[in-house]
Length: 305
Ligand code: ADP
Ligand code: MG
Image (cartoon, rainbow, N blue to C red; front, side, top):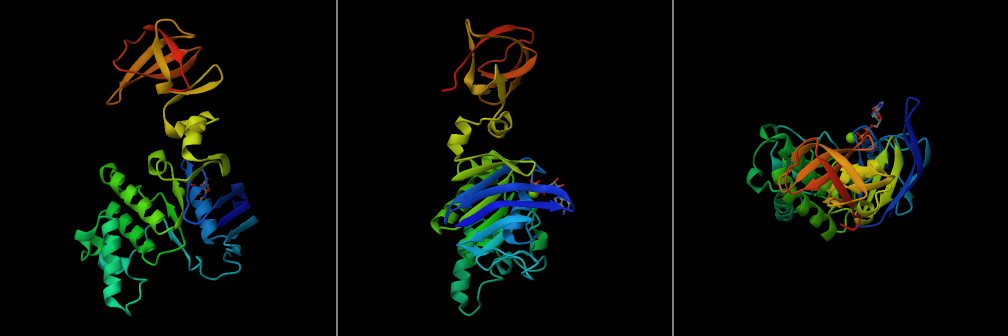
């Protein structure tokens, strides 16, 4: 189990991580969800031992993870860390990069392992291509495969799908997380996009300004977000008389507790998202067709929707 106990960390006196605690069991996926600048990358670097914590303790299977004061080269053997920078050798092939840490003692085994990972990240056709000729998204996929090559016990992923277009992202995410589960590799994945993690995380930690704002399994967090800034990661939401509602939980009604004036309708594919003013605040609800600006509407609220 990865145990992070009450850790704090400052960059030259400026607090970046403030008393954060959590556990990740073997084979579990924990998502760090937070806006840019909230402290996700710093947290991953602390777990990998890039910096020393100011307070607190980080351990894997009861063995403390040491920072640079006590360990020259960051990163324990059993842990891999895929940074936002990829860290690849530009003048060698995709295959060579993936296999760089694999033993050449048994070439057939090495090739099988490399081919398996090429398949997971969808780069089989690019095996012989040099890294310098790849797109950002392809490089990101090589970095993922390289980190998985030696089957770590735990992997840290920093915005692992950020350079990959949404079209390729969806199947890749499914394959990566399926692979991690099948090999029982624990994972801490940082993202600002709920789509990266909602279907795959066992637990989500919402981070804001270096603190934990909320922590729960995805469904629990979605159904009961507690804060508007937590709900905002999932969907457009509004605070109506002190309660948080997603746009799909507010509906047009013939009579209703809420009377609002429509400001604008936005086309969202299947539905329209309608912005309205209620008690001087913006409120968002879904509707099948657009509604003319200025219309007065009654709305009903339904949390179970
Ligand atoms: P995230 O990954 O969630 O975008 P970061 O962990 O990169 O957030 O950054 C958290 C905070 O720490 C930000 O305010 C950022 O500006 C600051 N920070 C990050 N790296 C450094 C650094 N090397 N030196 C000083 N401040 C930093
Ligand atoms: Mg970051």
